[in-house]
Image (tube, rainbow over all chains, first blue to last red; front, side, top):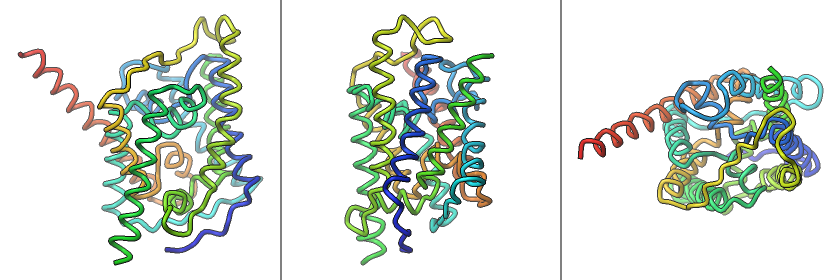
Length: 146
Length: 145
């Protein structure tokens, strides 16, 4: 596996702060949870209720805009994707199905829910972190490393 | 209109945070999940950084009558931990560990010129659609009984 150059911890923390500020901003001004899987489901018409559709669309469009701004003026992220096509498709299917079934992902449960100590979000976060660790351990150290 | 603007600004800030913290790089995410390998703590720092302002804002809401541009807060009040939540979370985590993409970074990452985030987002849509189909089917079977 190619190792990443270590990320300056302050940069990681600053990126996290921006994400947290985003969540805080949406909550204080519109009263909504910045859950990305839920917003995506609203935009695509998969979810029938939640954030108004045009607001969800504005949010989802903002994500790549924000990434472009950082890329242009602050730092260019180095992107390394080693997964094969079938693996990426399988991953997408699982993430789509799982986030609907569990009502959220890393943003809605992991950031917003954990911030307010929601028992459901704490449980969901523990669940996805655990299987994330297990899948990587199996893929890298049992299958690839064998 | 004001809410749409707020949502756009939120998305931009969020996407900027994901790019700045390198969460748009699946290799960085996988290195965090690789606790038996060369563990990379970046994602944990991102989580800590994100939770601080978000938690402070949530405490603030307790003293507010409502959000600035809305009549009430739309914060989920369900506290029941059920099988759907845990199994759904587990399925999501498995997909996350498989390629290192979760929904936000995949969408923000669409601008870096690779095809992979597009393939992932298309498959994610299909996965959500399958869930909706299976749920509708389940509801129909339940109604038929």
